[in-house]
Amino acid sequence: MSPLLVLLRRELALAWGRGGGPLPALAFYAGVTTLLPLAIGPEPERLAVIAPGIAWLALALASLLSLERMFERDFEDGALDLLALGGPGLEAICAVKALAQWLATGLPLAFAAPVAALMLGAPVALAPTVLLCALVGGLAFAFVGGLGAALTLGSRRGGVLIAVIVLPLFAPPVIFGGGALSQAASGIGGTSGLLLLCGWAAAAVALSPLAMAAACRNALD
Amino acid sequence: MISGLAVEDLAIRRGERLLFEHLSFAAEAGEAVALVGRNGAGKTSLLRAVAGLLRPAAGTVRFGGALDIDEARAADLHLIGHHDGLKGGRTAREELAFAARWCGAGDAGLARAAEALDLGRLLDLEVRKLSAGQRRRLALARLVAAPRTLWLLDEPLAPLDSVWRERIGSLIADHLAGGGMLLAAVHDPLPVPARAVEIGA
Image (cartoon, rainbow over the protein chains, first blue to last red):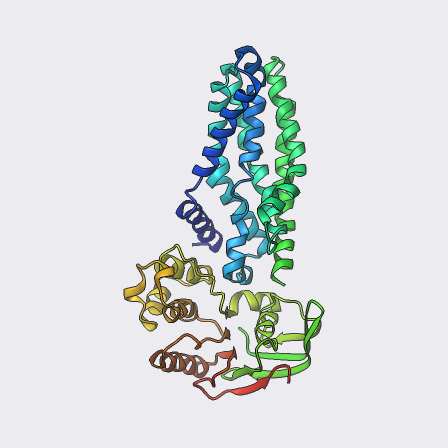
């Protein structure tokens, strides 16, 4: 079996093993999407307008939750040494870790997003666009989030620091996804926003492993 | 294949502190080098520098052989320190299988390692239930599962009892007899003939 496949299986097993996999992120997601209407007010017309936006933003926030574990555990117990010494190179290792992060939390969250949007009263026709945005955006969030996780390696209170580093980088995909959703809601199709989101996700997947690897090297040195 | 190790005029700095400088030594196939020195002298840092995880402030590390240095590091050395990379919440079997497969070992290597370090009974336990000595044996199993030329070991014998010190000693002796190399940071003498290199003297 290729070492990267071995690594991917281990990452998924670790995500499910102690952390309960996507369950904490899903619970957080359900909590935020339930609390927001309580704060805004129960009028169905008003909720229906903002429902896709809420589902989308809450997804960005929920994907921050388990980022801290991505590199920190391996860094503290020395497993990152073993990984860094292996043949595939740190860039590939970081990409696999971010991919595993997406598979373990981003993917389940993406399927929860249209459910939350419908629950809040969004029209059914919007559900596919919400799902697509959540799938593609979640991938970008995992890779950019991994960059934040790698940069904060070895610092105390890394979790908060990750959010501070990563949230500004989440701004473009949140805008593109929000644009796609409002275009779809007004019936002019959400293609251009979705394409921008795909482009941003492709850039994140291609570039952030390089930065993650550099940050890991720096932390190990 | 790594056929020799040459450390030339090496200096390592951690933050503002210079741990040591002008350190040079060499080792050939079949040789063991014991790194000795007080606590904090830089033995672990030297091992990490040889492994390429840490950038030295000056000097070079070279391996003999045909491979370029990064390939040689990825394919032909093991580094095992006190941070052994084992996850407390997973079973010994899962952790051994991952570490060994990551280093390119197959099922045969895994079985050989479990037998050589007598891990059979322990494999189904969670790693955090193992004693320090058992945990070290689990970490060292990688050496047997995926044979590689250069072993970089940080206090390999510290948590082991006298029986296991002897058995690991014979494991090391076999490794050296087969043309392997060992670079170990130690406080107690190694159970095999080794050249001592003093760090930070």
